[in-house]
Length: 288
Image (cartoon, rainbow, N blue to C red; front, side, top):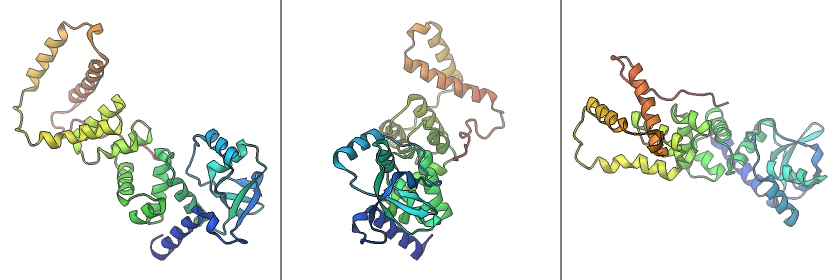
């Protein structure tokens, strides 16, 4: 949805986010029975967090922003305000302040996607699906998406690169590494990215730890190249080191590093002499 049509949608999003600025009458705020509001079947959000806290706030201070709906047959379909609606239901409200917008199904779907992308608590999979629809299916530019969800173009670009990366996407979508931590690995290439990713997952690294590890080669590159030591020599040294070790002598860090080493050794042992690459990228998983 490029050009004039996408700019109109951005303006619609601003209207939905500031309902008190809409004129009275059609599109104005009015109360609607909660029982007549159904969730959009296209809503990317599959889980809701901290509804009890929001319900307490609504009970104490009231609903500060109406939900946004559209009329569909004999009921209403929610466009924006999923958490507010669930909080009202939790409080046992019979009615809720709402704004009715006259949108078709496609426009309502886009407004729902954008409203959810503005939130901080979407899961990686929910965020990936929403961005894919806007950029791939609707042909929005990165700048248009960034403007709509109140983020920088760099933020949107990095998220898209993570979700499209064959190595990073499966790990992030499986919730084994945060999106922000995965973004730190975008500048790391090949085998080193695989190695850092495996260590980050195994050690449950935070973003700062991943950034520190990813940036380390930039400083090391300025130093003289280390002397190359044969694999056979290193193997003999490791065998000698482990010969007098008991399991009780090993720390958790020792055990973690040894597990990673055994994984690497297994891949090396299975690799054919003619193989161009010993460490293959992680398998790609379905996003949906």
